[in-house]
Amino acid sequence: MPDTDVLVVGGGPVGLAAAVEARRRGLEVVVLEPRAGTVDKACGEGLMPGALRLLQEWDLDPVGHTLAGISYRSPAGHVDHRFRGPAGRGVRRTTLHDALRERAAALGATTVAGRATGVRVTPDGVVVAGISARYLLACDGLHSTVRRLLGVERPVPAGRDRVDRRRYGLRRHYRLAPWTDLVEVHWSRDAEAYVTPVAPDLVGVAVLGRRGAGLDAALDGFPELAGRLHGALPAGPVRGAGPLRQRSTRRAVGPVRLVGDASGYVDALTGEGLRVGFAQARAAVATLDDPAAYERAWRAASRDYRLITSALVAWATSPMRPALVPVARRSPALFGAVVERLAR
Picture 1 (tube, rainbow, N blue to C red):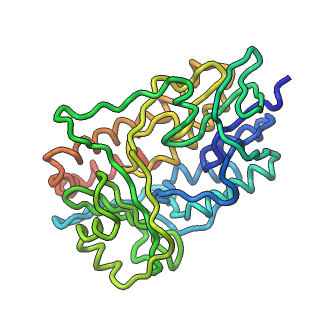
Picture 2 (cartoon, rainbow, N blue to C red):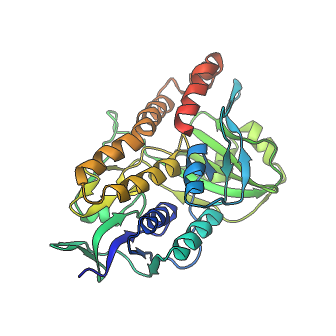
Picture 3 (cartoon, rainbow, N blue to C red):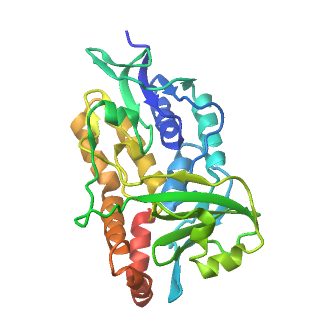
């Protein structure tokens, strides 16, 4: 007999969400995670309305700062869209992780310290780190070990000009009162800066672009934002992530399901990683007995994110980049429709 019904590899927010969903369905769950305590990572920390709704359905309501919409900003001007329905929320990643970890534990999920150094499929399911399970949910992030071990990692091709166009993220918090209830996306010549209010006295700033300058140098390219941050004290270290683009050939391999960033990732440009990851976690648990059904559910849950984000990244990395914000300003209805489509 397997040790547990579901083994979740990766105890980040998506892995813990999968554990919560599985326990709510009456399944025994073990979470395999090498890091002890609260886990932080470089991210924008904005929960879009759809992500917040899913958390609330799991009886979670993490504290943070209201997010009423999205603002795209550049020296050419800005365009704002306020959500038509419920607001989102800026939540520190550590706060979110603690809330999910406590909820999973309260529901009876067990966390074990360890790493997935090998994956062995058996007639009864799968064995990882000496733990046998009927099913494995791989929620181990951008650089998923499980994805690599299963041989379903798809290399991201270089551009036709062989220029390295991979994108990376840097994030740091600043101790100052938020000046807006919008997520601001500031555009420079070759990077974007995301400003997310997460508390009454704290904002998170994440910069996305190609590998190169440090965070302070990158912020010099955003005059409006640099003015806002002038004199503000950093609250914590700079954290980095990347390369962001990851692909997989399959999301279901026998009793294994790839979930969240482990299943493939386009870019953080639209801020939809957690909403999509939570939806995939729910879909994975609902389709444990049917790999083909999970592939369909995965595609449905991530379709808008993959299509819209891919199109925006292609535009943002092309010679047409400077026109992106001006075009959005001239077409506020279209900009609002895209935001609403991704937010829900």
